[in-house]
Length: 168
Image (cartoon, rainbow, N blue to C red; front, side, top):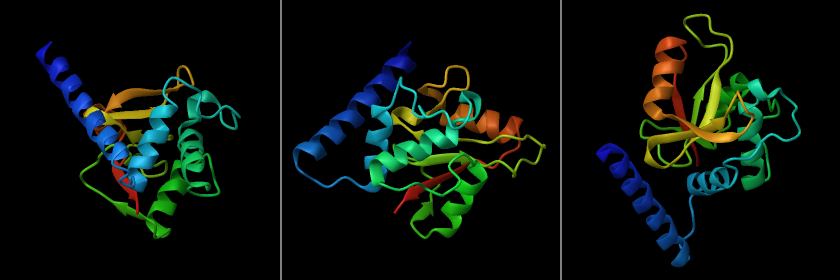
């Protein structure tokens, strides 16, 4: 119970920081803009065109949130975590980070599993070390992983590299 209270206090503090920044008319970083756009999609279907089935719509969801925020997709192949990862490496507007913050993109890219797992996953870091991503069960954009649970499942169990990127 104390842990949950502490996590809630951290989220409240982080929200106060965002609010103070907004009230002072301090420009938001690209990472912060992406975070705010992702939060606005919580509880919604972030890929309503259903180009991909709900079970495979993580990349489509992140692409749509990125498009709503910046007016362009991360990469032309909107359904591919593999192509998205390649764009992070080659595009010149992304930097890998080892200290994820709200708005950082987390990716376990398809095609890179050391254990033969087929489908990777992508999401956006939220407050309190949580991750927002497409829920395969409902197709809704939810906070359904912590950074630690993502690393355990996608990294250790499925053998994907777990990587974090910020838009410069």
